[in-house]
Length: 159
Image (tube, rainbow, N blue to C red; front, side, top):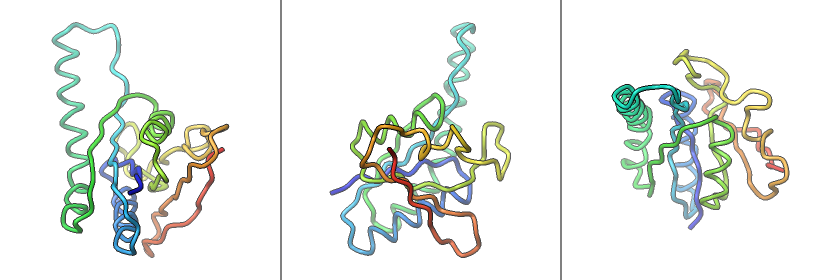
């Protein structure tokens, strides 16, 4: 069974990527999907109470982002696991892909962004996982466009 990493942030493009992973599984690929939500690092100069409160907010935000994707996978009968990490999105996505030996990263080309703005670029330039993976051949990123066709394109080999 192969692992497919699908970063999700609650956006429509992220759900399109989940649907693409489901189609791959329905097409005969024996896959388990790792749903990843990446939250920003917490500020270091905070009190314990503030940190605890911020951590709870992050957990709630992550659950809110992952829940619709998990529901789609459950309805389709596709095995999956939820993952929450904090840090820079591109580096965190690549780190988990390597750690779990994922066969591919399937993600939307646009996401909610840092401030929750719909339509913000998900991984632009140096922050894009496909561009940040220098030196790591074998991993593949499939970008699912936000076009009305629900199609996925743009497979970049991560080098």
